[in-house]
Length: 278
Image (cartoon, rainbow, N blue to C red):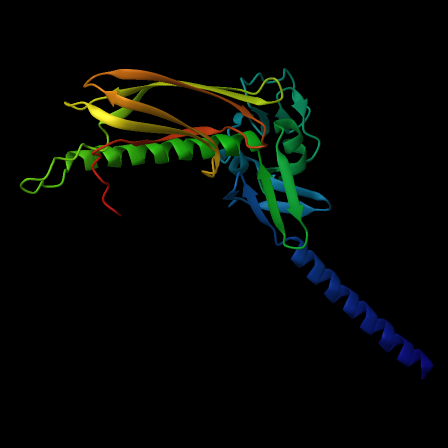
């Protein structure tokens, strides 16, 4: 009787262990991988402490170059020089990758190992299954490109608006277009080689209107990529004749931890046409 009870208990424990193992493997393989903040849609393998991603799909989401010869691959962020003989499936420049899997005619590389070659960062939360592979410089560069594109759209809207002037009522003094005073010949120079950022900015303020403009205020702002104001300086001019220009210059030391500060400006003057509210 004791032997039968012991066998039943042992069988139950083995069944429970198998269920727990299956659940653990299933949960561990449910990863959400992001490459430079974009979801990775290729295949992956989660094995031990290694996260292997499909090589070709991974390269498509990075700025890496790839050379292929048969089943051998060479990756590089510069010019590719293939090795004379191949002893490993995948190389970064002339260094072979140690953690590579070839499965179902696909090559997989380990995110942690490739990050050590590309100076990228891999963050992995086992609780959520979220994996982030990113390069800080690439993200900052992308954010700067988005900011410049947004500024270009804004400037284009301003030009369109200036052409669509309001009708002036009888006896009312005409308003001066909002873009009559312009910033030209901008020259922002940012240097952080001495462990602190130094911004030198020069530009010219020009009256592009057909008449003199008075009480001009030009506010130059130093902002972060998130549009937070880090510093601002106001330049005033009592009057500018048609076509007249004035030079302005700004010097600022970046004592904050904000990278790649940007320049924005606001211009106001007497008789400026008000902007329509969006």
